[in-house]
Length: 101
Image (tube, rainbow, N blue to C red; front, side, top):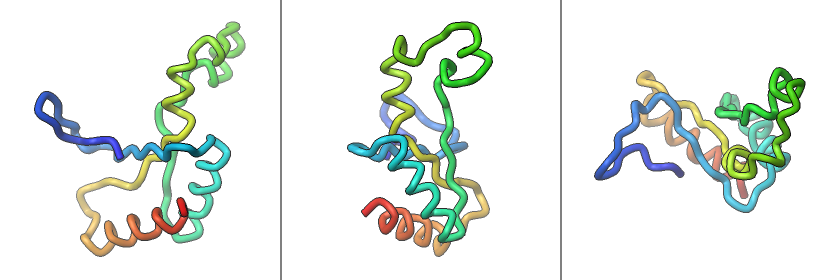
């Protein structure tokens, strides 16, 4: 999981990004689908611009941006907001672990 606070940085906590190492984008999409079966909406944020139609149509190619794709490939955004209860957080974590295994 990506840290939200460190010695030289702090996050607003707006998004909770998780990197699922050793998983492809397709495998992460399956995890997202499984999470939905548990009633948990997850998402992918920060899609590389060359994957968007407007940029593709301008000739941008994702192969020219390997770092952007590497960050995108195995990232999943978990729910995060101020109204989550401890029980809901535990449910999200437990469900995520089951879906990744």
